[in-house]
View: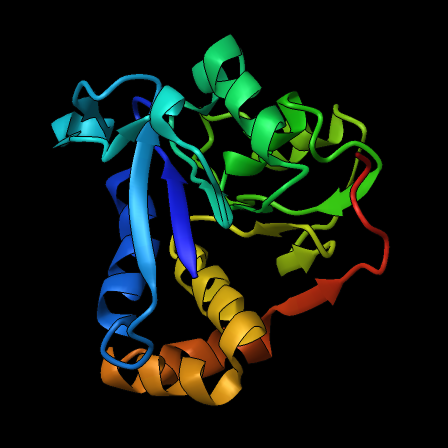
Length: 211
């Protein structure tokens, strides 16, 4: 599996956690690969100053297996960036698309979630707008307090650290639960993963996304 991870400014650094899961997971599944993409190869500054270099620019991408769109404070700007939306629209019909946290709001802006069920980050501080409420403004059936929603070709995951669990779900879907369990054990995340799966539902939708 090759993960194409979309970068934009003001992503929360913790939303890079799926990259860590893939990195550790290569010890169990050697063909796990990842790359970071952005409009250009210039460094992308994340929330609170961390700078990350993309592996490829959008124009250099010739194939996508899994496209992951993360969350962070910059989601609103990304949701209005035509280059970012065009990149998502180009690859969504041909790839498995996964969002974590407020990345689902960017997918909604691209039209990828039209007519589908989805979830996103649900907890905010009082001064912040609710991502769930924002997502409900789109043509999306919002499912609250859900770990993730699997629509077949589009998966939306919950907020912040649930990006880790979404990544494990993705690995288990492709390689099986045993492989995912081995990676979680290696990461010493097995207890947390089991607790999250008991606390929050995984919803599988039979409908395929609109093309």
